[in-house]
Length: 212
Figure 1 (cartoon, rainbow, N blue to C red):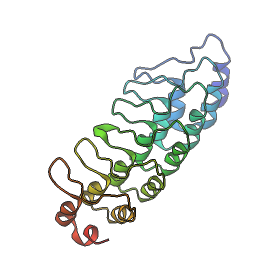
Figure 2 (figure 1 turned 135 degrees about the vertical axis):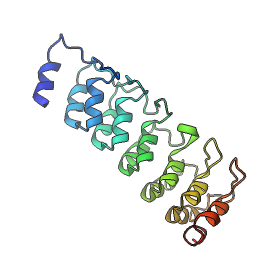
Figure 3 (figure 1 turned 90 degrees about the horizontal axis):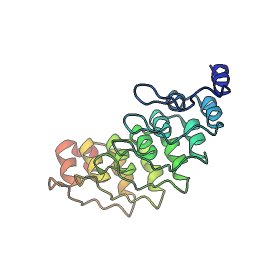
Figure 4 (figure 1 turned 30 degrees about the vertical axis):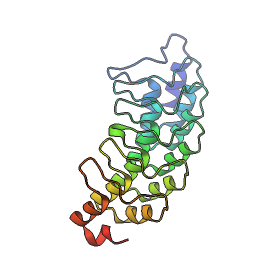
């Protein structure tokens, strides 16, 4: 379909930022589907706005990050007309948080290298990349995040749940072991229900979680 896109983009009558019923633009469609060559070609047109959002507040980059399309995220991240890589959708998910929630480690690694990306931003219910990694059990992602000294491993969401509490509650023993190897991690925070990581570990699966 690249030839069709090239023909249409070359016609001055075509609205390059047209939207469908969900407010998705051609750039968003290509980004969501992972068509990196098409995305790069569309971005060559100065009329194209990479900052537009669809009905739920997602930009083209948030869609690509959520789907795990590394080359598309890279093309959008480096584009000079991108206003900010920290724009969030209605769930308060930025591209970084969207990628973290899905466990797309390669995309998170790319984003963390970018000077404008905020690694500590909070999303839905205040969850950060590190709490999402713990909640979902993404060990490789957790390891990557903890090597970035800008990342605070003790951040809590709106309910007081830190990465350690999430790891214990969800029974992610490997995540807990990785967290406890980091001297910065506080294993004793208390969430809004008055519970600690040890309490969740003891209640859920003591052999897998309470032991390191």
